[in-house]
Amino acid sequence: MSSEYLIWGDDPILMIPGPSELHPRVRQVLGGRFYPHYGAEWGKIYVETTELMKKIFKTMSEVIILATPGSVAVEMGIVNIANPGEKVVTIDNGFFGSRLTELAEHCGRKAVPVKADMGEIVSPERLKAVLDENKDARALLVVQNESSTGIFNPVPEYVRIAKKYGLLTLVDAISAFGGAEMDVDGWGIDFCIGYANKCLNSIPSAVPVAISSEVWSRVEKGIVNPGTWFTNLKVWRHYITEWSEMGHPFPTTVNTYSILALKEAAQAALDEGLEKRYERHRRAAAATRAALKQLGLPPLARDEQYASPTLTAARMPPQLDGRAKELMKILLTKHRIMIGGGLGQLSGRMIRVAHMGTTASAKYLLPTLMAISSALRELGFIAEGAEVAAQVFTSVLSGAK
Image (cartoon, rainbow, N blue to C red; front, side):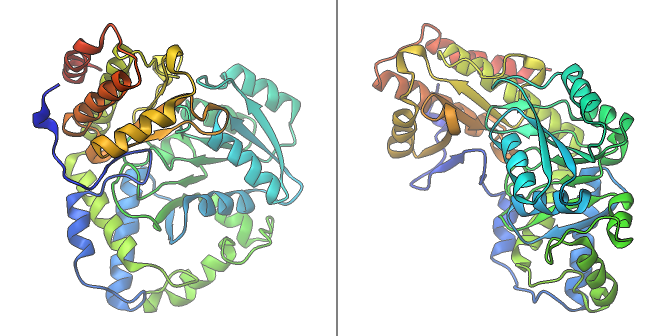
């Protein structure tokens, strides 16, 4: 791997599954004008941003933007879809699937987790069996891109099944939004959460959410009582109705820079073309998996069909099992590259390399793979395929489908 790909100085490159590297156009916005979070001029910018979000979500449904972490938006979805005590079925095949279960229980909803082993999906047949046993369930909650394991769940199939059982659907698309296909209306998603600071390469604190008319209606009619204030859609409807004219269609202060940055990042993604962008991510992912496998780090995803297009989770070689944190430390201190590690029971046993937005390219991935190869050697492991990893990456990147 040629050193010509080493493109940075002292600042570490973020090859972690969020926060991601900032898009150059976002950096320009952050050095520009500061806006107050209300007024006619700001109101126009906010509405324009929601319209861009609709294009990425592929929806005609109403979109709002929360100035919060992503988990707050997930909590909002849960409390507005189901009442306390009602059942919600969760796809629980990783850290963030388990968080859906945890959030639902903390919000007083009865979670019914459908589990799968790490690196696998919940089969549609298994989901159907659980729904047959829980015909009183109100909703299905699923993470589109399980970033703890690098699994891309078959959301269209899950949602199709859920709709046959009359369930509302919530999809956490946080780590895939802007980097993988999404079709809120075509798939029938009722509450979908995007994100700014992963595949769109913007800054945190701007979480777009697409909400179906059915979810809005159930809350406004009092069929669902969220029991909250900020995450209550009835509260949001009040401010949208009463304060939109003054450019303040949200209950609280927002970080206007985060929304300005999201707007610019979304426009950059749309300028590239969504289908072209998604194909770029798929190829970068396939190439990264192939190269890591050559280096002796097999992907955690057991079926290529369900491997994430926005990050790769790979096991450490058996000889280095439990030493992932040492490898990560070498990458950061000696190569100024930050990658992710395993979460929960996988801590120390695997690494996670993101290919999100701008980093889904040879410019970022080749030096990352070179650094991983070097760190493995420093830890005493040399894979038989290490010398050809770069060639494999380049070959797959140019030809993977």
